[in-house]
Length: 412
Image (cartoon, rainbow, N blue to C red):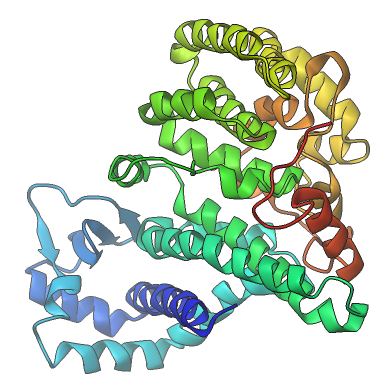
């Protein structure tokens, strides 16, 4: 990976750590809380809203503690800490002193370190702790995920150039790829939680989708884990990107892009039943269009869309097929023991599941209704995704990107 990409990714992580440390200091430093109350004109027991981030991320501080909100009420005590830090030279040292007193920076660094672990997956409690601060971290997290597209491509390109080299020569690159891909998935979930839709939709509307959808970089990995993250991301964009996904489907010529666009549309519909009637009609029309177009993939493209229609018609049957197809992972999901682990990254998102089409499609009803923290394990009794051996990482890449980082792939 190029030095410039690494530096930008590092800057995004540093920004998250800095923002998180300030929030943790606010939560744990009574002296800072007292000073902020005095600046905002709040009495001892009166709630005060403290602005922590841009554009409108506020911490509500009251007797019960600190809760992040996306806007302050029109009246009441408030203090714009985010703005004042940029114009008051004395405030920065005050915040740094609070961060030192509370050990907030070290705690913030530990919280984020779990996302990048080489040997262990983030625990449910660790991710729940991070998700609590999602409104503050989500924009930097999304920037990190966006940069990962370029970073992962660069690593794949380097690995492709090393094809034929002895395994030890490729081991470092394979592990770097896997660490970055998993970090991208965790921060992608952090960036697309409840309440992020307005700015996500604004971002998606700010440019023309040529060779991109929010889900494609994850779906291309052809892994159940990455597909689950993609599904939650797409659902957060919601019906505002429905037409864009329909256009991406109509223009798709590679099977994996047909699968991705169909996957995204199905995720939106299963998350928001209001769009189902119109989408069902649009998908049926597109399946017929693929058959009329013919070509080397016409029949396959139509069958992918038909599989989505089957899932949409009977989500409960799709869920039963999914639980059967994933083997021992099924009971773990039913019992709330978590999705992330070696099994979830090994399972092929595009694997067939009989009459229900594809594993990724049949898994959507369950993956979309599972509470986000339950994506993560409660313990370490199962082999972690993070510690996947280099030979398996190489096999994963060979399956997902058969001849090179830009090549299309065929579904089963």
